[in-house]
Amino acid sequence: MENSNSYFGRLLQYICIYIDKKHRKVIIFTFVAAIAVFLAVHMYCFTNQLVNHDYALVSNGIGGMYNLGVIYDEEGGLSSGRFLLTAANSLSSRYTLPWFTGLLCALYFSLSMCAIVSLFEIKSRLSAALICVAVAAFPTAASTFAFMYTADAYFMALMLSCFGAYFAHKFRWGWLPASLLFAASLGIYQSYFCFGAALLVLSIIFTIFHKPLSVRDTIWICVRDLLSLALGLVLYRVVLTLILNVTGTQLSTYMGLDHMWYLPVWELGTRLSNAFRYTVLFYRVFPFYSKFVNIMHIIMLLILAAASVSAIIRKKIYKSPIKLIITVCLILTAPLACSLIWVMSGSVHLLMVYPVVLMSVAAIALLDKVEIPAAPAFSRFVRSAVCTLLLVSVLIQCSANVIASNKAYLKMDTVFKNAYAFCLKLSARIEATEGYHIGMPVMFIGQLDESNRPIQNPFMHEELEAFTGVDTERSLLSAGCIPAFCSFFLGDEITKVSAEQADAIRLGGKTEDMKIYPYPESIRLIDGVMVVKLGNEF
Image 1 (cartoon, helix red, strand yellow):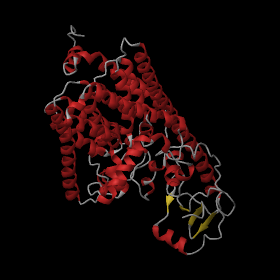
Image 2 (cartoon, rainbow, N blue to C red):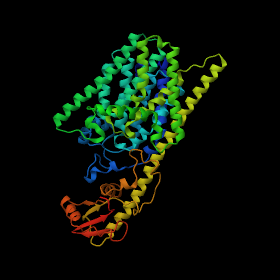
Image 3 (cartoon, one colour):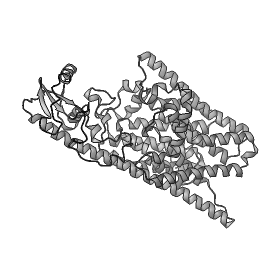
Image 4 (spheres, rainbow, N blue to C red):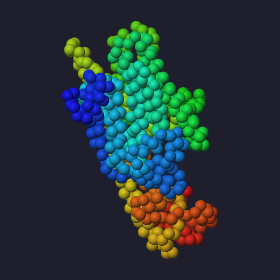
């Protein structure tokens, strides 16, 4: 590579100048391995059209932020505080393109992994590959792909946050570009800022344990890294405020976004407690994991805690009270940093908790740096046994995450096919109803009733209920989604009823004696409108 005179050879040499020579080969390996792992874990999603209810709402004109097949609209992004979301999405066009979007996400993910591997100074290719598997398989990634139309933008936000942490921690004046990267990440999706924050906390801990730092250097690293985070938040807030004032847009109340800057003091204790418990008991929160997986996660955390205490003793950090206080505070802060979004928002779903995976990344980084002593034999045995247990716990979590993610994809695929069959039969029933003609307005009332709905498929509904973005037929076939679903997937344009006609029919009491679909008398012509009663719940 060094002797290549070709354009690409020279370009690669230029890029590699900025990579530590000791880790250059590992970084290049990470780039390739990350793409391969990412595509392997999520191939089901990238080669299928998986649909949820958000995919349809706007095209029916009843709310939401998306059109079927079309990405995030600009106004919706701004009201959510994500003023860069539309720009970030522009590389994948205005349409849902699973394979192309997947490749873009793989590229962003790969660069993110390069930053993480470099940040922790990983020496082993096996360790680098394990980090790629752990982060790629974490269920937040699959939950992100349930919203494929914004997935590439979200992974761009992840990349920006990772490089923000990398610049802040690796370079003396890196906090300046880092603050810009953090602000940009916030402008795409706020929760990825927390990924960078957690990454910095863990990076500082590893630096203290593995490098001979003076008290002054320790304080400077902490101040510099925290400064980059603080400046990023301030810059984001200033730009967002200016844009909101110029456009006259109000922040949405969704997930507490409008109160992110005004944390009530009386809620601080509860939010900190939730953040700590969420990191420790993550695998107990979701029913798609067994108790064994949660136990292995807790064992991993206990080993990390024990390793931290051991490092404090071995490195004699306790001899410097200031350095000891800083180190202990950072160790206690690490689980909170991984669930920082709980403190910022107070209302959290699976799409927002990616930083929790960094505890597994820390475990792999620890394994990469552990040295097994030559003697005595008992000490060597104990250390080897603990490392093996730590490795097994990480592998079990990775395996459980890969399975959970692909279960989610399988459920989305099955639900979509069921919904397609339902709409096909429903469309035929509407057209066969006496009095129907093409272009006639059609009105759907109620929601699918659980006892009468024609789709009786309980496929993993309870197990994956908490998997954000993975719908049941009930949510995908709501009264608002059905017209858009029929139009987009069946090519059956359904004319919407006007608001005045809808109110007149609802208030007129002419639907009370109708049966619920699919029974006879569930579809009726009322005042020139074909009314379909899906259920009694409005």
